[in-house]
Length: 303
Image (tube, rainbow, N blue to C red; front, side, top):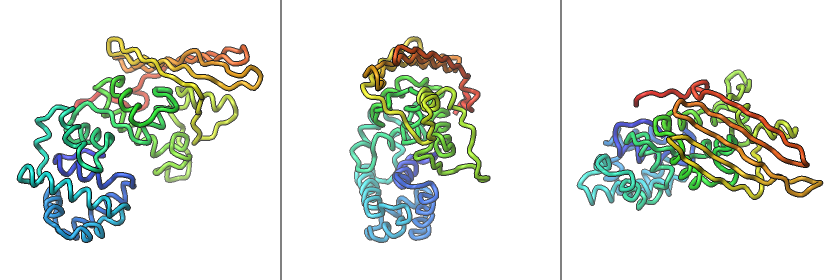
């Protein structure tokens, strides 16, 4: 995902970037420009006019899934051209969010996450896309349950995250997920510090999941606690994010204990508070954390 002026360019470029690295996506785009000799919307007009799908496929092979990508991108552009007279998708700007989701959702390769990125980055709508980094980190933070899917996390977080911080928070979590060993998938960040060091994770002290792993001695930086029987109850009051999580914890001596509550609140003044009470083997542990979101580089800015 990324900021683009052209809606068509944003949509097709996002399709080109699915399930691949930024480097491969950029290489595929550069190869396509060189092969079809175009730039911006001109390149997508050239893709639509090209009847040799194999030529497109070879040009974007570096991104992977070249046959599927080329067919889907060509089909989308050809359909829009036939219906609208051109490959321009600027008409989406005059639609509501729900109308845009319905319009784009009919095309293969445009799922909820891709459409959410288009709404946020190309159309400036208050959307909160949930990719693998956002899902993983919000699970660790306890903002969504440990067994949440991208779809359920998307629905929940878009209701709960204040509109004015959606863009900054999304970008922050994606960037952090690519750089932090503790929060990256399998403990292997895409862009770790060049000197070989590991960054001091600014979220560690405020993550119930990571704190519990550390206290249990199972502090593997790529681990994610999976507790059975988790459920989430949500209360939205005056723009406040209030998430309550009840989970069962396995106890060798007494079977099941329970987490009484984990409350996470985002107040209008951008302060995050986390409180967790753990009851296990008749021992209650309580910890309270509070951190201004601005301390982890979330800024209220006009975009």
